[in-house]
Image: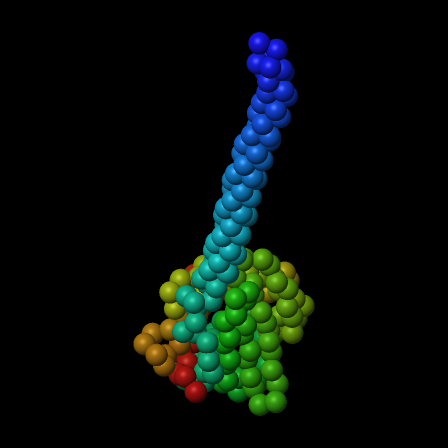
Length: 221
């Protein structure tokens, strides 16, 4: 009996030690699995965040390049073929013979589309007039083409193969101009102009008709 009791007393701490050891092993295993699970979740989450950022950047780039793609056919070098009505428009604005004659020499036109803007360069001999208008519709300010102060303008529409720009300027010859640059086929560029002035410089009265339309025709150089 004493031997049996003594064996039981020895077995208790041994059993307790074994139980504690097993519990620690189990806890360690559970902790390891938990940490692996957390690590896996964090990695998955980071991957999702990274993919989301990439998608947002791709979408932003796509939006930025959208207008450029639509207007890409306008890009290139162009040579004026006909500008019926342009001289009449300049007379309405009170521009003299010398300026009107010089304008007829401006036959070269360069159009460039970038992700950010639409760039226009008019060439007459060694003279160049360059302007750039943001595709986001922001206003830009440049010297007036008649050299009488400055105008403000912005892009109002970008469609497949066309860009529309609205210009506005104060006196002298206060008014607005809407130009639509459009391509037909591969080699023909048309610029449709809608000129609206408060006063016709020739009559000193409101123009009749109120809006004067004229078109410039260019061929790809």
